[in-house]
Image (cartoon, rainbow, N blue to C red; front, side, top):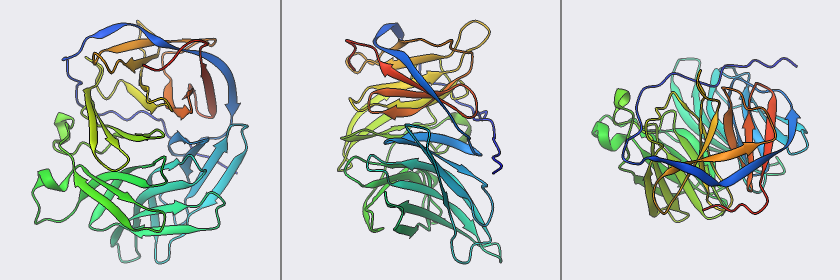
Length: 321
């Protein structure tokens, strides 16, 4: 079966604050474990729970989700929504129990649009389709307690631009909305106040993290309360950030693309000081370009080219800060 691949990196504007300096070497270290060779689709995949989830054949009547597990086994899940002429899937992810979720919008034959969230059970026997309008979600993640978290904005013209944007919503597996709140968040200057597009929504066992397109990291407990807020790596703009991951021990890591003077780097947040420190990644020749896809527990998942999943285990004796 054919598989298209669109380059992962989109050019976006915005600069992370210079409030915090880059520190020295991180206490975290990773050693190359093994590679998994598979096929990637059209949309940036993400490692969620125990598998990589991505999208292919997008902007069609029946896009396909694919899931690749730790052993490289690939599963295909086709999307079909009644009355949809074209389905555009923004983003898909997996959960700790094996469920998957995807957000996007549909276009009907008369060109009307409608935003959706689809949750698919771990055994793939049950699908919950949630119509979101007037809300539209840019990102989705699955929390440790089974809740579905999204971030996006409203299309209600009666609201101000500020209150329309940066809305976090939580749903349960039945499709019931269980929480909704507007978040004060820093956006990239080019599209202020929208901080959600091109952002990263990540989950660990007991919290949710949102790394905005304005290089601000905001963390929430599973009941929706804000518990922490940090600036992103200093001097690193969104064009240089290549993936964000939150591991099972709540270590936060950001990938930074290389250039002619340095290779790809993994930066870890020191929560006690707010500094970002370089994590040692050994056992493989790291190129100028790579991307963090997420974490499998405390195992770092990256890619260096389309179709290769690279796994790095936590070095012996290392612990998240």
